[in-house]
Length: 537
Image (cartoon, rainbow, N blue to C red):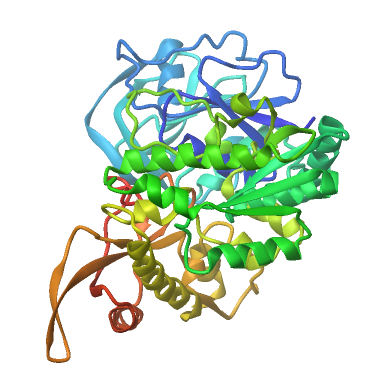
């Protein structure tokens, strides 16, 4: 059983980012709701308390009794976690004079404290809170300050309990990873045994034990998650795995043929089903995005179920579920932004047990496992793509003709991103490459990288219910605009629009308008998430 750090989640938007930072140190960690600490787990070596949207004084603020944790494990409180412990043990937390948000510099550091080992003077940190600790408990000592925040960090005297009011997990805290490393490795004593190689070995062994001689069904989408899950299962049980690939007709241009060719080269047993006629028929006249998703989800279940019943003796359904899908949400607002398309619900309908070999991995870890398994790079680095496909990138009714228009425009855009190369210093390239993309780079000098690999996700949107006037030759046109979308991100929880070169944008725009009948205008989406989402629907 690997060592693990437990992150108790109080509802922060950056909790998953803390986990990713810990995993980057080859240390396993698990995110749990603040009130579900696993007291009987012998593999726990440390605890991190996350931030929260609440103030410690709010009536609905989350609270936990730490008496069974404190003293047994090293504890690090971040933002709300730090304020909660200070407040609980006799300190004072009050509203700040003004909301402390953004960059700050540590003006005082106790360099002898193990949490700040190796820190530079005036290290930059990222603040994001409305309250501040104005007085520490009597047995706590201040170990760091900023110009505006006197108690930026503290330790309980004589015990392994720390709190920091800034966010070491975010990129803007320049030595935040060092602080977390000091805690996870230096203080908690992680042996750094969590890696792609160790995951493959242990998971294959677990799958062999779990599945025995049973047959397994897996739904392949062409995406990296289901593909890596399939290759991992194939390594464990071979021909007893049957993969089903449902083509709903709304994939990218030539995508069905391309991914099936990839799967054949990987030695997977795949059954392909062309169900596009059914999907298009059921989507006729539908314009509401949620209704589109529900129809596609329902039809997928029906088609998949019908094909799965042809597999004799199947006892398991495998899915490419990854860790962000499994983390139990605190559901603070109770609001749904949009539903997600997956095959949940199939086990109940099909009376199959569920197998999720990737359920502990983040997306970038899935890609590292794919490389460890020897999968082709173009499949590993494929951008995320929505389960409903181009249906949610067509604003309006989905028809075969509209899908054709979008496929052609999107193909020009994506191929353009793949072929356009820019030269960067190796150090900058490592920083800018989207998570999970080509990781083997020279240590110094310059490297050539594609725009595709610098972008987390890109796609084209067809404004199907909108027409705009244009001129081609001497003729007036009245056709559709398309919007191009490209974002940079690390985990899709937040995303910024990608600053693509002007000459690239000009060429792509000209190529789309000149070669795609039905399009006479190209726009570029420069909104970030939040407040926007990555997908338009």
